Image 1 (cartoon, rainbow, N blue to C red):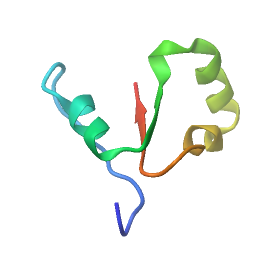
Image 2: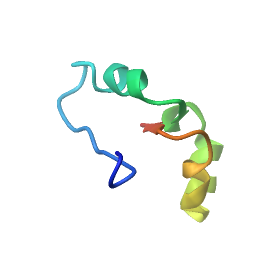
Image 3: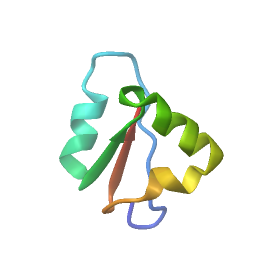
Image 4: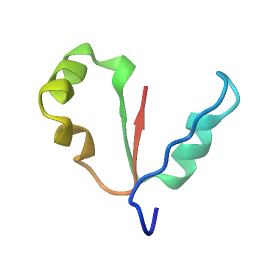
Length: 59
């Protein structure tokens, strides 16, 4: 994250990806929790980046 500003964590469900990411993030957005937020981010992707960094954007 120091050089790129982001990382992508992929893998099967229920293995701890989100829990691991939470340990390293200072703020987060959960997309599944707010359908209105999803539509706003679709219109303006920069909204997802608002917040203290490093930031977790979780589906």
